[in-house]
Length: 425
Image (cartoon, rainbow, N blue to C red; front, side, top):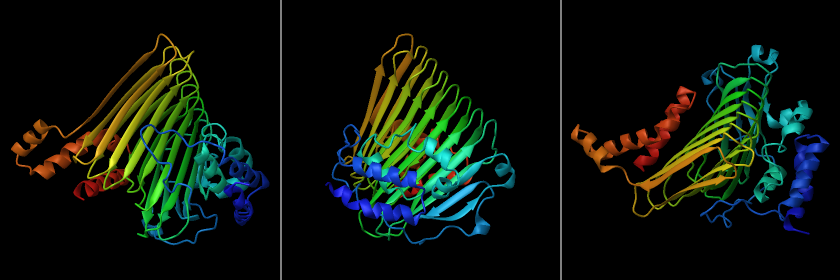
């Protein structure tokens, strides 16, 4: 018996506390059995095997922490969670009448079991992909489910807010499942934040699955600002069918150690993925980010743009992978990874990888690791700016492609404030 099977009764009790249907309980138990036998994910040039990614405590968390008052919440579709609990949820009657579903995942498991069961860790991120995805499936503690029916266009941004309380000695495993039916169109923004300053070493594990059916168009934005006491595995993946598109814009501003898999599987002819990522590493933080686009069908387009800044004694690794499979004629795979180093004690890597198995395709890459351009600094300082201010302005321009892609102005401002705060440390 492995140590994970010692959690058997605890997982059953935990599932019962959520009043989950039997299929979800069975799914958890099946995942529990696989944790030990599956390998860790591979993130090149990042050693994370000894991180506290397996610290779990399958108990319901108490609702602690604070979110803005209800009168300060926007009127667009929104779900807010603190720990396990959903503290705010709204969707307009008009969207509900069109068949849009936006609710916490535990509610969706009970109220829309057929939909959730069909897609939950089935198409985008298989439960048994690696040890950390199995761990996630066994100990997942809420998230959101978004379903947008065929031909529905949503003008307002859809928002999720997840707050982790660092004072709770519990894990933070969130699952986001998004299903976009044919020719639907919408923008989605998620934010992960921490409250509390406890020194306990906690475990984070976030899995995001976006199913884009033929012709669906999705703008997906995320701002990650989890605290320094939580080591996190982030897995965000799109499953794109014919002529669908996902435009990703992700700001990674966590203070703790992070490994991330950001993948787009282009499985249908003409599918298109644009991935824009900014990351800042500070202190002694280690961040390893794998961004992959896999062209599985003809005439698919996958572009990756990653810009990162590293300070103090931190480490940031970008691995960009463009993979064109046999049969994907006319595919286009492009990537650019650039890292700015603001400290002689920091370490940065930008590793471009192209795997081409087909002829008649377009592919290319660019990668660089370096310091702020002295000519740019000189120009700005000649216009009267102090060196620190000029440096921050150059860095903001360097990170600009992702900042401008965030669909909600308040979220843009939040990301800019986070960047400014990290640069001033």
